[in-house]
Length: 110
Length: 114
Image (cartoon, rainbow over all chains, first blue to last red; front, side, top):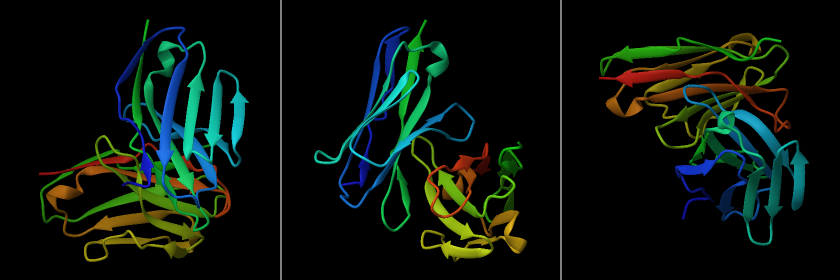
Protein backbone atom coordinates (compact mmCIF):
# COMPACT_ATOMS: atom_id res chain seq x y z
CA UNK A 1 0.00 0.00 0.00
CA UNK A 2 1.36 3.43 -0.95
CA UNK A 3 1.69 5.94 1.85
CA UNK A 4 -0.60 8.41 0.09
CA UNK A 5 -3.44 7.37 -2.21
CA UNK A 6 -5.17 9.79 -4.55
CA UNK A 7 -7.61 9.02 -7.36
CA UNK A 8 -6.00 10.30 -10.60
CA UNK A 9 -9.33 11.12 -12.24
CA UNK A 10 -10.01 12.81 -14.57
CA UNK A 11 -12.87 14.47 -12.74
CA UNK A 12 -15.20 16.59 -14.90
CA UNK A 13 -17.77 18.88 -13.31
CA UNK A 14 -19.92 21.75 -14.65
CA UNK A 15 -18.97 25.33 -13.88
CA UNK A 16 -20.39 26.51 -10.57
CA UNK A 17 -20.49 23.05 -8.98
CA UNK A 18 -18.81 22.14 -5.71
CA UNK A 19 -15.74 20.00 -6.25
CA UNK A 20 -14.53 17.45 -3.73
CA UNK A 21 -10.97 16.10 -3.98
CA UNK A 22 -9.70 13.46 -1.58
CA UNK A 23 -6.63 11.63 -0.36
CA UNK A 24 -6.13 8.81 2.08
CA UNK A 25 -2.92 7.99 3.86
CA UNK A 26 -1.50 5.15 5.90
CA UNK A 27 1.26 6.79 7.93
CA UNK A 28 -0.11 8.07 11.23
CA UNK A 29 3.11 10.12 11.70
CA UNK A 30 1.99 12.62 9.06
CA UNK A 31 1.31 15.92 10.78
CA UNK A 32 1.18 18.54 8.05
CA UNK A 33 -1.19 18.38 5.14
CA UNK A 34 -0.99 20.42 1.98
CA UNK A 35 -2.82 20.89 -1.29
CA UNK A 36 -1.04 22.02 -4.43
CA UNK A 37 -2.47 23.04 -7.79
CA UNK A 38 -0.49 22.29 -10.93
CA UNK A 39 -1.35 23.71 -14.32
CA UNK A 40 -0.09 21.96 -17.42
CA UNK A 41 3.65 22.48 -17.96
CA UNK A 42 3.99 24.46 -14.74
CA UNK A 43 5.36 23.67 -11.30
CA UNK A 44 3.00 22.92 -8.39
CA UNK A 45 1.65 25.93 -6.52
CA UNK A 46 0.77 25.71 -2.84
CA UNK A 47 -2.94 26.34 -2.24
CA UNK A 48 -3.43 25.51 1.40
CA UNK A 49 -1.78 23.79 4.32
CA UNK A 50 -3.03 22.74 7.71
CA UNK A 51 -1.69 21.02 10.81
CA UNK A 52 -4.78 19.91 12.63
CA UNK A 53 -7.96 17.96 12.16
CA UNK A 54 -10.94 20.03 11.12
CA UNK A 55 -11.62 22.58 8.42
CA UNK A 56 -9.60 25.49 7.11
CA UNK A 57 -11.18 27.93 4.69
CA UNK A 58 -9.56 30.33 2.22
CA UNK A 59 -11.92 32.01 -0.20
CA UNK A 60 -13.57 29.37 -2.37
CA UNK A 61 -11.29 26.63 -1.01
CA UNK A 62 -11.79 24.54 2.12
CA UNK A 63 -9.28 21.98 3.34
CA UNK A 64 -10.54 19.28 5.66
CA UNK A 65 -8.45 16.82 7.67
CA UNK A 66 -9.73 13.79 9.55
CA UNK A 67 -6.72 12.24 11.29
CA UNK A 68 -8.76 9.47 12.88
CA UNK A 69 -9.79 8.22 9.42
CA UNK A 70 -6.49 9.24 7.75
CA UNK A 71 -8.46 11.15 5.16
CA UNK A 72 -8.08 14.66 3.77
CA UNK A 73 -10.24 16.62 1.38
CA UNK A 74 -10.19 19.81 -0.62
CA UNK A 75 -13.49 21.45 -1.52
CA UNK A 76 -13.79 24.08 -4.22
CA UNK A 77 -16.97 26.14 -4.21
CA UNK A 78 -18.38 27.92 -7.25
CA UNK A 79 -15.87 26.16 -9.49
CA UNK A 80 -14.53 28.11 -12.47
CA UNK A 81 -12.95 26.96 -15.75
CA UNK A 82 -9.71 28.48 -14.45
CA UNK A 83 -9.75 25.87 -11.66
CA UNK A 84 -9.07 23.19 -14.29
CA UNK A 85 -5.71 21.74 -13.26
CA UNK A 86 -4.16 18.80 -11.45
CA UNK A 87 -4.55 18.93 -7.67
CA UNK A 88 -1.89 17.22 -5.57
CA UNK A 89 -2.21 16.40 -1.92
CA UNK A 90 1.02 16.29 0.08
CA UNK A 91 1.89 15.27 3.60
CA UNK A 92 4.85 15.70 5.89
CA UNK A 93 5.83 13.77 8.96
CA UNK A 94 8.36 14.17 11.73
CA UNK A 95 11.20 13.16 9.40
CA UNK A 96 10.46 16.31 7.32
CA UNK A 97 9.95 14.26 4.16
CA UNK A 98 7.06 15.48 2.03
CA UNK A 99 5.13 12.75 0.24
CA UNK A 100 2.90 13.72 -2.66
CA UNK A 101 -0.14 11.95 -4.00
CA UNK A 102 -0.37 11.18 -7.72
CA UNK A 103 -2.65 14.14 -8.33
CA UNK A 104 -6.26 14.36 -9.53
CA UNK A 105 -6.89 15.94 -12.93
CA UNK A 106 -9.87 18.27 -12.70
CA UNK A 107 -11.84 19.68 -15.65
CA UNK A 108 -14.42 22.40 -15.08
CA UNK A 109 -16.82 22.44 -18.00
CA UNK A 110 -18.10 25.91 -19.04
CA UNK B 1 9.73 39.12 -6.13
CA UNK B 2 11.17 36.66 -8.64
CA UNK B 3 10.16 33.06 -8.24
CA UNK B 4 12.30 29.95 -8.54
CA UNK B 5 14.15 30.01 -11.84
CA UNK B 6 15.11 26.86 -13.70
CA UNK B 7 16.92 26.27 -16.94
CA UNK B 8 16.71 24.87 -19.46
CA UNK B 9 12.94 24.42 -19.72
CA UNK B 10 13.25 21.56 -22.14
CA UNK B 11 16.07 19.18 -22.99
CA UNK B 12 16.24 16.29 -25.43
CA UNK B 13 19.29 14.05 -25.33
CA UNK B 14 20.30 10.60 -26.45
CA UNK B 15 20.79 7.89 -23.88
CA UNK B 16 24.26 7.66 -22.35
CA UNK B 17 24.76 11.42 -22.79
CA UNK B 18 25.25 13.72 -19.78
CA UNK B 19 22.78 16.46 -18.87
CA UNK B 20 22.68 19.21 -16.27
CA UNK B 21 19.88 21.29 -14.83
CA UNK B 22 20.26 24.60 -13.06
CA UNK B 23 18.12 26.18 -10.34
CA UNK B 24 18.13 29.61 -8.74
CA UNK B 25 15.90 29.66 -5.64
CA UNK B 26 13.96 32.58 -4.24
CA UNK B 27 16.28 35.09 -2.62
CA UNK B 28 16.71 34.39 1.08
CA UNK B 29 15.43 30.82 0.91
CA UNK B 30 17.86 28.53 2.68
CA UNK B 31 16.29 25.20 1.78
CA UNK B 32 16.38 23.87 -1.77
CA UNK B 33 14.79 20.71 -3.13
CA UNK B 34 15.15 18.75 -6.33
CA UNK B 35 12.18 16.59 -7.30
CA UNK B 36 11.49 14.28 -10.20
CA UNK B 37 7.95 14.07 -11.55
CA UNK B 38 7.03 11.26 -13.89
CA UNK B 39 3.99 11.53 -16.10
CA UNK B 40 0.80 11.09 -14.10
CA UNK B 41 2.65 11.00 -10.78
CA UNK B 42 3.34 13.40 -7.97
CA UNK B 43 6.81 14.86 -7.43
CA UNK B 44 9.33 12.58 -5.70
CA UNK B 45 12.16 14.07 -3.70
CA UNK B 46 15.66 13.47 -5.01
CA UNK B 47 17.69 15.68 -2.69
CA UNK B 48 17.18 18.41 -0.10
CA UNK B 49 19.72 21.07 0.79
CA UNK B 50 19.87 23.21 3.88
CA UNK B 51 22.17 26.01 2.77
CA UNK B 52 25.06 24.17 1.08
CA UNK B 53 24.60 20.93 3.01
CA UNK B 54 22.72 18.00 1.48
CA UNK B 55 20.58 16.93 4.45
CA UNK B 56 18.58 14.25 2.61
CA UNK B 57 19.90 12.53 -0.50
CA UNK B 58 18.57 9.09 0.30
CA UNK B 59 16.45 8.98 -2.88
CA UNK B 60 19.17 10.22 -5.23
CA UNK B 61 20.49 7.43 -7.52
CA UNK B 62 24.11 8.15 -6.76
CA UNK B 63 25.55 5.93 -9.46
CA UNK B 64 24.47 8.40 -12.13
CA UNK B 65 23.02 11.46 -10.41
CA UNK B 66 24.95 14.19 -8.65
CA UNK B 67 24.02 17.57 -7.28
CA UNK B 68 25.76 20.54 -5.80
CA UNK B 69 24.78 23.79 -4.17
CA UNK B 70 27.89 25.87 -3.97
CA UNK B 71 27.68 28.92 -1.66
CA UNK B 72 24.22 27.84 -0.60
CA UNK B 73 22.38 29.64 -3.40
CA UNK B 74 22.20 28.20 -6.95
CA UNK B 75 22.13 24.47 -7.48
CA UNK B 76 22.94 22.11 -10.31
CA UNK B 77 21.62 18.59 -10.79
CA UNK B 78 23.53 16.34 -13.17
CA UNK B 79 22.82 12.97 -14.75
CA UNK B 80 25.66 11.02 -16.31
CA UNK B 81 25.00 8.87 -18.24
CA UNK B 82 21.29 9.38 -18.90
CA UNK B 83 18.99 6.39 -19.37
CA UNK B 84 15.63 6.15 -21.11
CA UNK B 85 13.90 5.87 -17.72
CA UNK B 86 15.22 9.28 -16.70
CA UNK B 87 12.72 11.00 -18.97
CA UNK B 88 10.66 13.13 -16.58
CA UNK B 89 10.16 16.67 -15.36
CA UNK B 90 12.83 17.79 -12.89
CA UNK B 91 11.45 20.32 -10.46
CA UNK B 92 13.37 22.61 -8.17
CA UNK B 93 11.69 24.11 -5.11
CA UNK B 94 12.80 26.35 -2.28
CA UNK B 95 11.52 27.29 1.15
CA UNK B 96 12.56 29.79 3.75
CA UNK B 97 14.00 27.09 5.97
CA UNK B 98 13.75 23.42 6.77
CA UNK B 99 10.76 23.98 9.07
CA UNK B 100 8.64 25.87 6.58
CA UNK B 101 5.85 24.00 4.85
CA UNK B 102 5.59 26.61 2.13
CA UNK B 103 7.62 25.29 -0.75
CA UNK B 104 7.75 27.32 -3.93
CA UNK B 105 8.31 25.39 -7.12
CA UNK B 106 9.98 26.42 -10.33
CA UNK B 107 8.48 25.57 -13.73
CA UNK B 108 10.64 22.47 -14.11
CA UNK B 109 12.89 21.08 -16.81
CA UNK B 110 11.26 18.53 -19.07
CA UNK B 111 13.87 15.93 -20.01
CA UNK B 112 13.38 13.52 -22.87
CA UNK B 113 15.95 10.76 -23.31
CA UNK B 114 15.82 9.02 -26.71
